[in-house]
Length: 116
Image (cartoon, rainbow, N blue to C red; front, side, top):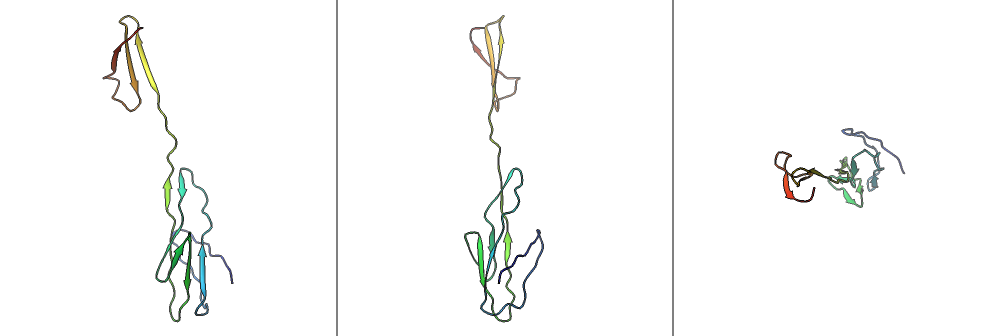
């Protein structure tokens, strides 16, 4: 027997009347991409749940209802970063002020002797 259960975050659904000894295998379809995020491997857990390689198996036992928890971890994808350098020259004094991104504010520029 095969089937599909579609759930949204926070929803619970199940299958009843499975024969004792049935081995159930659960896999999740890859969630839709979300800009700036990366879906990690799904994490299945619960009593009697064996999780491996992004899937889970469990065996149906008499008189119990197996409970499986599924968590979809996400990671923030940081965009590539760069920087820039600004040089301000003062021809009348022969001095050069430079600032790189991430350094101190313009009020305290780095002053070096150089050719205008």
